[in-house]
Amino acid sequence: MKKLILLSSFLMSVTALSQDHFAGLTNSSRVGILTTSINPAELANMSNKFEINVVGVSFNVANNKIGFSDLTSDKDIEKLLFNGNEPVNLRIDAEVYGLGFAIKHKSWALAITSKINGKLDAVDVDTKLGDALVNSGLNSVLGSSSINNNYNQRLTGTTWGEVGFTLSKNLLDKEKYKVNVGATFKLLFPGSYSNLGLDKFNGTINNVGSQVYLNNTTANLNIAYSGSLANSFSNFEDYSKSVFGGLNGFSGDIGINFQWKDEPETNPKKNHNKYKFNAGLALRNMGAMTFSDDNNYKTNYTLNIQPTIANPQGLNLNQFENIDNLQQIETILISQGYLTKQPEKKDFKVKLPTLFSAYVDVKIISRIFVSGYIQQKVNDDNSNDQITAQNSFTLTPRVNLGFFEVYSPWTSNEISGFNGGIGFRVGGFYLGSGSIITAVINDSKQADIYGGFRLAFL
Image 1 (cartoon, rainbow, N blue to C red):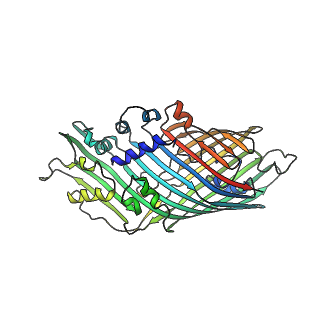
Image 2 (cartoon, one colour):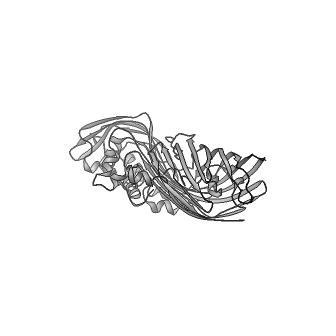
């Protein structure tokens, strides 16, 4: 358990890591492969006839407890993480776009893309329980403390690959407006998965001498693992070992786009994708993938910890201090009689984070735009078979000079709150962050960085 928290703190301290991937860039009027990540219908607005995506990388960290200044102070990060009564929420994830190709012909546009995803999440972890598990050797729990939760708290990690096929069509193209529709069909390649879920946890934590015990406890316990994350859920190398498994899932995106065109210019080529107002709606990530591996296990237990002659104080939490995989947790609980069911070897399905998104991009004056983007998750992050996502709203002022573009995304996320950053594009190269400004001046609880390169021609 301790390694999970140490990893999270380490990642936040060494890299400017937002939960909005490529924040500010995807709403640009310079439309290409990345724009389809928020709406496949946009591909018919592609700024060039051809585009080759070489690479695009986005790293993200967000939490609701630790501020940027805490990382550079002498404060105990682990104690800060479990301070107060609000449950701990932590999201670490990465997206890597690989080789992709897009082509536009008349009213049609087609793209083939590849992407790798990795996530490590803590969802609604009770501060008292987390403190006892992570800091048990530090005697963080004094006396006795009762916990009574009616929700599911999770630690989960996932890796998977995607190959996407996007088709977009211009339905109407009038003098002053046009309407596009589009869809993306994605082949999913599940790599590794690990999930620990504690639902409706009720129990008492006692500090006896230098030991911390859990007693009079009941909960519904879900343990699932597959691939390299069966060995460790907090080691980065285990995330990178198996990011592209075999084909075993499908998902899809659908969207619609409306543009109010700008006044025509003398040069028709310069007028390509020029507008006064651009808006879109999309429903994304509708689908699931099945994890199947030689070390595949998924089991729903009933956890029951009561005093016995052998263990009158209950379960000693100090023994979990350096635990790094779910098999070890199962072994300890089963060997001490707190779980009576044996682990079940079987395949299991995990849902992608289905999202509804909407946006508008408005031309204020020549070369200056302001866009608004909202993202709303459809599913519940507390479900054991669900990959997580965040609700967010982003406002981005932007100056677009054609070859050069600079923008500043300002985002409100449900986990980390308010964040602001800056980014730029020079031709096909881009670099940005959705939180670097607030991280420096306002003690942000989020950090992110992204960059990449793409080629466009004709």
